[in-house]
Image 1 (tube, chains in turn green, yellow):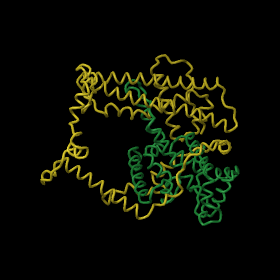
Image 2 (cartoon, helix red, strand yellow):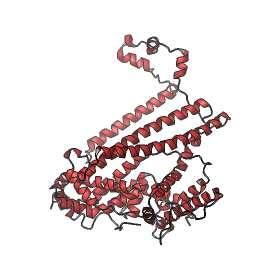
Image 3 (cartoon, helix red, strand yellow):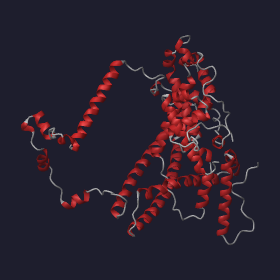
Length: 205
Length: 317
């Protein structure tokens, strides 16, 4: 499996030290090298989040591309709000900003897909001798993915951000535009749902 | 929660069974040239595509004035709701508080002359449809379980309506995605497809869509015939009877589709596709193929002298 390496956090160590403000300033000046730098710093982590949210590599790339392009579009405003050397510059975290956009885009797409999904109509249960085997095999298939993708969108985002990306609750809450209490409640429900689903897969100890 | 029952929402401990299962969810890397594509798209991005963004920080709340005003507004609205509910339930009459009717209130606002009973006006103005026409227009109401042919037909009609809406929306989405893919190619400096290529591509999509719809239609017809038989034999169907099997079997369909795609690949592509799957999925697919092949062999009493090669060769491990 061509799995990407998994650094633990979206934000690079330089984030928050004013480096992001300088980067934003270069983006605002339409410096393509700065955009490449942003992609190099954040795209892999953003892609992980988007992929684990959607379960689709192409969709995930689309989401990351859209988020980066939005940053490109908005860079002048962001740079104006966080001038290099100012106190505000130290608070700017482009990784967190991108994370929020990616999370919201993924949730939006999942909701839209859910609305549009399902032209599929199942075959009759008794018409194929292999139907049972298929269903049984399906139950064994992709159990890890199935566990995560079975969660509702927001619960899924909470698990992806805190478990897979190891973000602190406060940062994950910020990425989801929630206050910390509401996020912790959501995370609690998400873990409970995950455990129940895991138990129902039959492999839980 | 009892002491013996663990907290279901507790953090997931590293090394636990659940954590091991979750860790199986691997992520493929970004495709080659991703950065270049984004850069090309950024450089070609016209200013008109600027989209509003979420604010970096929450908009600062205005001061105490708005909070006070909001509190008053909520209070007034709540009081109004409670008062309306009390009037509607007759609670106020029990305490001998007179409650004017809506007609009286309207008359007090507009004057007695305009307080003519509206029912009479509408009854006079609107001609009653003929009884047969009215019967034809009467919507069928589904009360409780579906147990009459009319109710079943109405359920089918509603399902068809929703399905048609989804099909239309999906077609629009396909068009949008094709447009955006072409746009991305242009932005990346790649030649866009010619009109013939695009037409051929759309034809292929349309053929695939028609194939899926045909399968769906056949299955729908089979299911509906089965439901109609049940209704005719006096059984009642609940909403769950109609909808649940669809949801439960969806995964099996996706799996069948995946198998079909694998079969269409060349051996090298198939081997590569299998290699990219997590081991568990790969094993499941291979088992499934073997089961299918065994089933096919069992169905054919005259096996060939040289058995056909396994459509999905086990990858070298």
